[in-house]
Image (cartoon, rainbow over all chains, first blue to last red):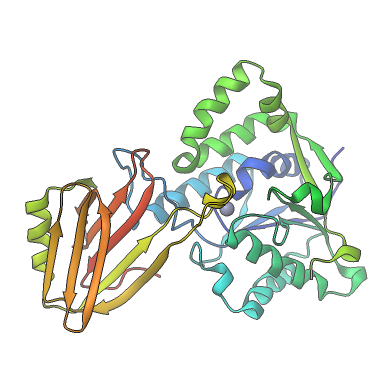
Length: 227
Length: 116
Ligand SMILES: [Zn+2]
């Protein structure tokens, strides 16, 4: 059961961060008529997949990934996509207050009932953790009664030890096509993975089907704040 | 980008010598290296849009090549360069790609600044 929302604000640092574990949820919200704003902080400028023979170089990659992000947004039905202009791998080195303000301004403008991002310090990539810290801090500063709900994703190896099992499980089978289209939109990042995934899905591999049909989140708990 | 042709790359490197040029230099194992391989010591470095003027630049070794730039008071070098291109903006882009096509090192030289 996916709860009704007034407005959903999704904040991730890289194009494709939304694809693997949130695109089914986003697509479903859009089908429910819920406005979704996706703020993507960088264009994944420092990605490493250039292919062999290479299809891109360090200077052309951002434009390729920008086009992929636009395509992914279209696949999910997102009409409010924000590209925030930071550089991949540098988010943690930005001024912390500037990052909080960036998030606070997005919240102020879009008045979301739900924010979706990473969980601080359990999200492996330094940009993920830095984004998550800024999101949590911005929401924490709001009066408790005004705070949007915060759904987070985490995938560090010790996630279960720290957070236990996710409390929110979305059944998104109805959006499976859109989820696959979103994954495929980010071809420069996913083409290798998707070859394998499509084979596993064709073979009805239970793990692959579970990935496609369910998305899992930890509701951020203010009584167990990360700092 | 094309596989390095050392003589041609040497000509291109020579053409940027004794000029103020912007440098992009990067080494990386990827941000997920120690996630996928527990205990992996992940190290890398990145500089972008630092201006230098080199008096001598050389392509050395067999592929993957080493590139060294001698500055009046120092050095820049990159190891593991496999591919290069002179792009439509006249920038010399060099990269070291592993067999899967993942970038491990890159060195770029331009007379105009790179984007942010
Ligand atoms: Zn990411």
